[in-house]
Length: 381
Ligand code: MG
Image (cartoon, rainbow, N blue to C red; front, side, top):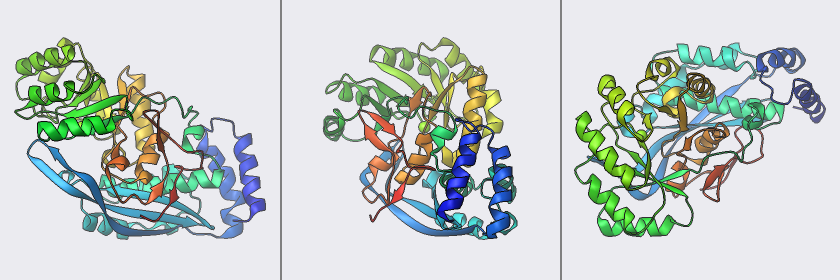
């Protein structure tokens, strides 16, 4: 895209209003001014990539040292949007399934990348599930759209990027000595830690961490507690130990016991496995205190933004979470973190072969860059 046209688009963006909520109307203007004159087409490409974790990742009954991802790009008129699908194995998608999905995507019918609603509705309609694959297109398209307009998404959404909650940093289950060592390594960098419980050593894990730090702790039980009365006893004990929130205490379909637990619990209870997409949010009201939104579960930034708005309108708390993923997907998630109750955006900090610069850890918070789109630049791993 020529500099002149980009300046023109930027001036249109400014006219469109500071917070740019009315993107479809703006897109309508832009399509007339760009696509008709350039004839550009969007080109989707992808490559599989394996993330190497710094430490083996252990949760109850499960351990791994790598996470497969697929990195995507959408090119248009000289600009490149970057996206990513991250596939922790327990969620069912693989590099092969993501690539199979991406091969079915034909963006040839769309001449304007700013028509996010149209394009992403089409992508979602190709087939069921495949939410990480869909997110890899959603993120690349948001990055591209932000670059066309010349602004990062937190600005387009009207958010103040510094106004984010401290990110949690997960301390994996391990021997007492390793746990203490991990906590000491990161204590100065983070203002809240996250602990995965739901196994048989829950109290010991907390005591071990408490032997070296007084930082607030978030607890993710990963559906591990099976009895609501025992779960409440545990939560009351955890409250005394300085835990500030509980994520997914019981199995995802046990909504009645969870609703009872939320009612009785002195700590807020967040849904993770129980809530995947926008359609799940409304029935979480009265069951959980809040929801954990992850781009890879919900098909990306567009639906994540809708979930956030619906949950907040329903009076629920919202946290933004992640998988182990590069700074590409983390930076995308960071765009919508301002104003939320909790952020769990440590995914890129856990890997040793990140391929993007983007959001950075500053004083315990993940803060978006000022670059347009999702705010990333590719780097050599
Ligand atoms: Mg979780």
